[in-house]
Image 1 (cartoon, rainbow over the protein chains, first blue to last red):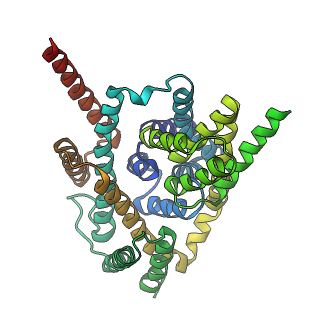
Image 2: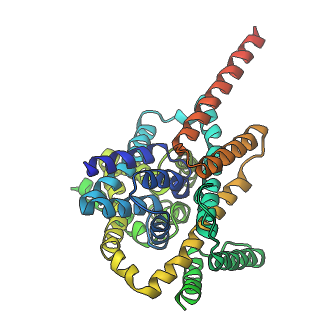
Length: 190
Length: 193
């Protein structure tokens, strides 16, 4: 049963996620938290691993969540689910509907969805930040400020801002992960 | 026989790219361009760039969309199949192996502390991905309104523990844009009359 649920969940995510791996995170988060598959911290760990290992982030996330809930079969059905809609849509576009995206109506819909995706990504980051940095899950819980998390956030903001100002390109995400991991060991470990 | 050879070629090339690209879709476009446009010349540069725009606007991971397309161009349906599987295999194997040991790995206290720091970084990465897209989008009245409404609604729903799936925002604004488009289309036809 869990296999079917994993497959359908990731099929749905694969079918409606626009804007690449990060566009997918708010959808994955909704389903994982609602089904009780992962906590917020576990989800963030999984994203970190998916970001720092090779391959598409979406495939990595699906495999990871699938494996945690249903072993190797779970990993397989979740990955299949997330890839299948892409595969079918692109096949159709390259064989039958070669001009699909030239229709003004289709373009209008895609353009209408894009700002919503951006807001979802920003909203996800914001609510995650409230939860991790200030312990605010909802208005019913009392806040619990994590100063160490705020310090780490300030440091990586500064590093990446200064780097992009000086070098005119963005700082490698993997290097940022290494820096914040080191800060984590220093601040939380001791 | 020749077909089999080209399927193997597609599969292995995609596997190589899936194994060595970090950082998701956009980093991968460069490598795909290098391998299939410049070296193997399976498709023209302009065709590939046009397709990347399509891959960005259709749902699903960009890397998967690109690999399905390149495979189809080279060898039809089977090409698309082999290409997509090739792209996924390295991710699948690597992440599956990690997931087996991840719990034990986190049980080491230094690693658990490191991941507490890394969680902060992941939020930063998501935030900067969002901000980058925000910078690029045209600031029309429609776009700004949609962004403000979605962001505010999502934050409030989450603070008041109301469950409202992200999918609904995508569906609602997709529908609204169809409506606006249809109304505009009908009006322009009226005007012509």
